[in-house]
Image 1 (tube, one colour):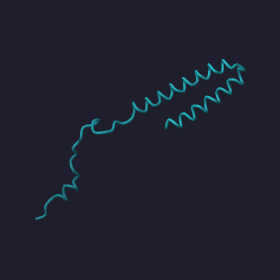
Image 2 (cartoon, one colour):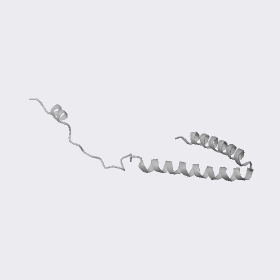
Image 3 (cartoon, one colour):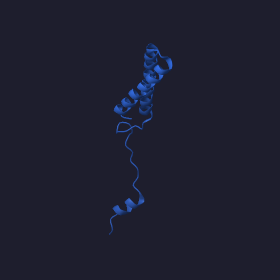
Image 4 (cartoon, rainbow, N blue to C red):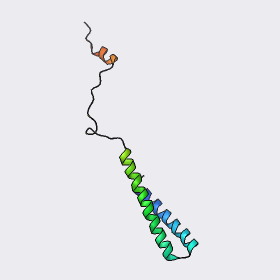
Length: 84
């Protein structure tokens, strides 16, 4: 997920959470504290999701796996033979 898309959703979720929390509690301080806690939880979840994607991603590049020489298929061997 691109960061800009995450940020837009993150801010939208926090605004919705803050509005609902303020309507329920009628306290600005409680709303502020709960919204900050919610932001930390969402950010930690995003960090863990990115970490998991990196951890389980398949390794790419030459350094990750040595080059393998596989035998040529039988059809390729026949094409290389010289006809006399």
